[in-house]
Image 1 (spheres, rainbow, N blue to C red):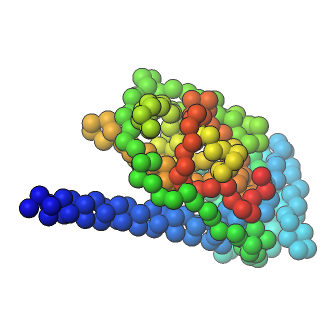
Image 2: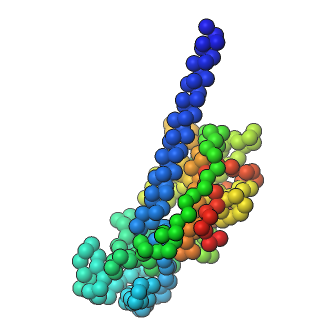
Image 3: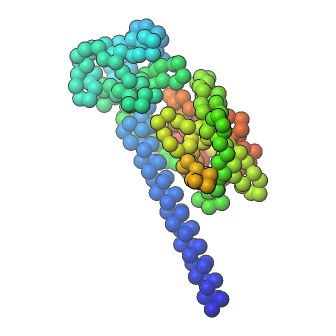
Length: 283
């Protein structure tokens, strides 16, 4: 009887592990699908800075196309040009373009297959251009992963900051923004306790985590890896699943403005889980 019970427990454990691996596999498939879609990160072909006042922006189309944009006190206006469309309609009058930090969403301007929108980081504005025929998208190399390991799915205790802590967050472009950490996530891995600070992105409920570990710059992308965690439950617990750690956009394109990890999120251990360094990356 004891032997049968032990076999049943073992079978249940194997089934749970197989189910978890299937969940991670599904997560990875969805991640790749988002990356390679026509407007995904692999389609980004330019990030063109805007200065206060009138800007004559040259888009990398063939032949090159110019867009007349005016930046004035945080508002960007596109001058009339029938070669551009918004929601399928030609731009027949000056139109304000909403940027990608606005809750209502950003304005997408199309020119043939190419599109652009206004990207804002801190007080800096730029034009991010996408082309579904980009070389990076056509030559996508796929993503390599560490084997799925349930030990890297850890329970974390949430310790709130009262008031929430402001964190200066530099990015790969040298721009520093002010981000908010609602509290610390405390977890144990390989018998040691660690604390990391997630941040709250505008318009989202999940916690955004930026980490660096002892694999960074070796097996994994050097700048950082990202992942999300659900807000804590009523008991103050959540799960940090490093099997879902993924490469930032700047691993796939030089035209991303990826935030870097704060010092407290630079872990002195190897996190052998999640995505490895991208084979087709530029760094």
